[in-house]
Each structure stands twice: as structure tokens, then as C-alpha cells.
Length: 354
Length: 169
Image 1 (cartoon, each protein chain N blue to C red):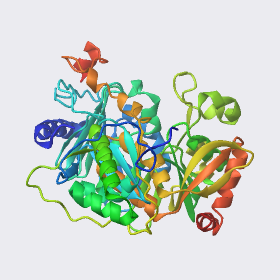
Image 2 (cartoon, helix red, strand yellow):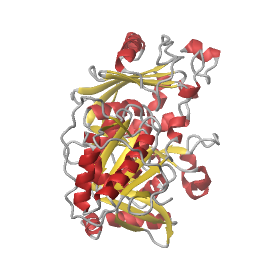
Image 3 (cartoon, rainbow over the protein chains, first blue to last red):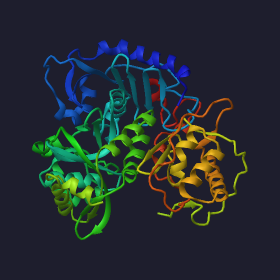
């Protein structure tokens, strides 16, 4: 990370450039209810393609105050070049990590391959996303758009964006935590097929003030290409089947709108373990085991989330029961185990059996 | 997964003990290192390298004192008293443990003149047989940091960008 005193002029220059270009964007914002608050997003037609994953959170103007303004620019259609700064044209490498830049109240991160600049101005509650070419973005930018901005915004208001799947009912649900390949997406998809609400298969918003509450960040669901045969029913919904190097991706609001669960009270955090058991077993786990499964990827995927995100995740692991799901190879069986876990009193029973 | 290093309870995997004064004080190497005590363990992450660690046993008991700037002598005495362990053994194991933490750039020597912060006593859970200083290193997340080719930056910015791209930006 570049130290604040070095980064501040660069951040100010970029923010001023983007501010000046706001007039090029459509005046009417698209409104979304994100983690309980109203977010106004202004973007031209090309860049707005990025917003599909937010569809279930679309909101009407009910007079509520806007908590965050987001401006998305497409460099091509909005004809917006960025000034040469250390942030976008770095010649001096930061000392390590993902190499983001921070100054008091502001953060920026540039993804050179995707061509995405994320800049968050906490004091003015404004977030900017600049895209080199929105038609040339990798799929993960459509699967989890604006994630760095959402992370910084959530951290500034007592929450966090976590790398976790989430399923449940309006009465309560669970986070399914683990690194890529641990069974999160498969489990979340199987759970919605079994009738549970789907909130996330990869990233989720958590409000930590008071009782922890989980909110949908994206309607996205992905499958591994090797398991496409088992997901043939979704074939017409996959957006990127022709791109063989990408995970097939779809949106739950199209696939099963009745399963979209925008938020729920958090009841437990579950770490899935591929165990090839004959039937799935869910048992108590230590908070440390769950923290190890949840924290590293939640933190390391997000520059500048660091210490604060780690504290929030640790607090979350202390606040709710921590469990381990030893998975069978049968998704229906896995989903059944989660459905039983979410019945009244079952989580307390598992935790007490430790 | 390999078994964790247990410094003291079992024979220590060979690592030279560092002879540093018993009055030496340390601090967490912040930033980039962050640590959280949870459930009798300490989880530590180096945000620059992506390597994370689990500290258990007497290491977790010593951790709050260590990062608060207690001296090696203070830590040794408290840990030995807590577990009813031999002071010389704890002193040796603590030295090895600290050397390991220093090797991983988790700890750094405390700046001279910076006083120790208040620290909690050793975990008040019932004392058990001296468990040694558990230390486990995980580097399976380092790949996440490789997605940014920051370490390959050329004279004209990102190597992945064409001249056209540079003009656009």
C-alpha cells in the first residue's frame, strides 16, 4: 500500500476527473436497496450491463435518503480518459498485497487486466467505477460487479462483504464459508433446488451492528464446467457457455425468482468439507476453524479491507454457532441436511452436542 | 495437511534458538500483519504475502503478552506458572517460537522507548499439561495475490496493456 501522504494528490486528481465527468452520465439514477440502504447508481447503457446481478435489489424512490451514490463510466462510450497517475499507470510498485492506494477517507484500486478502476470517497459517500471497455470485461466482473466499492462502503458502515455462500429462509439462514472449490456453489444451488432461499453462492453482505444480518450482494450463481451435465436444466440461463475458460454463470432472479432471498438473520456459519460420506453430517466446529475458512479469501481478495474486515469476521465467528458440514457426494442429500439444520432449534442442538 | 509444529511438547523441528536478552520486547508487524485471538487460538494473516498462520497452545496463551510488548522474561514466567512447567524449558521454547515469528516477519523488535501496552493475563482456562507452542503456516491463498501483476510493472505501466489501451486510459 502506498502511504497516505503519497497517494492523496493522486486520489484527489482522479476523483476530480471523475466528478467532472458525472454530467456525461444519464441524470436519472437507478435505485437499489443494498444491505438495507438506498444506493443510487448512474451509468450509461453500455456500463449498465454490469448491473444485472443487482436486479433483485432494484428499488423505487420512496423518499428515503440515498446512502451511497455510484457512478460507472465506460471509457469508450463516455469518452473519458483518465489522467496518468501513480494509481493507473504505476511505475513504482507498492510494497505488496494487491497494491491499492489509500488516503484519509478515500481508497482506490486499479485492476490492470480487467481495466477497472474503483475509487471510494467515504466522506462524500460517493463511489466511482471506471471501465476501460465494458464489453471486454472478464465474466467475474459481471458475476460480482463493484465488489471493491461495496466492500469499502460496507466496512465504513459497520459491515463487510464476505467471500461466502448463503442460504436460508426469511426466519434465518447460514453462511457457507470456504475457499473456491470447497463446495459452496454446489451446496447453495442444491439448497435452492430443495426449496431453501438463495442469497449467495460466492459473495454476501453482512451487517454486524446488532444481530448479524445477511444481505444478498449479487443474484449470481455459477457452476464448475465439469459439472455442466448435472445442471442441464439451467443451460438456457447460462450467459457465458461459449467462453470455455470461464465458469458458467447465471442469475437466480431468472432461474428461480421465487428462491431469491434478499436478507435473513444469521443463525450459524458452516464450513463445507468434501468428505464423500454416505450421508451428510453437520457437526459443531471451533470458531477458529471457521475463521480460517472464511477470513483469508474474504480479506485477501479485497485490498485495504485488511484489519477491519478481519476484526468483523472474527466477531461474527464469536457471535453465532460455528459448524462443519461433512458432505456426501449427493447434492440432494446435502440440501436435505441443510434444510433439516434450518428447522427450529436444530442449530442449537448441533452446537450443544459439541 | 502436515501436523503443526509444536515447539516444546514434542521434539522441536530443528530451528536454532535465538539468544536475545530476556528484556527484549516485540510488537506485531503492523501493517501488514493482523492477528485475532479466537477460541483458544490465534489466527494471523500477512496481508502483503497472503500467508496465514495458526498459533495454538502456549503460543496462544503468550500471544497477547507478546504483541503488547511484555518482555521475554515476563512471558516465560507467566506461561511457566500457568502450566506448572519448567521455566528453562518454556524459556527455550519461547525463544524458538519468537525466532519463528520473526523469520515470518510477524513480529518485529519493539521500538526503544515505546512502552508495553496493557495486556491480559494468560488465558484463565484451567491449566492443562504444558502443550508447547503450536505454530502452523498456510500458503494456499497466496495465488489470490498473483492476480495483480504489480511486481511486473514496466516503465510504461502495466505490461498487459497495449499502446491503444494506454491511450484510452
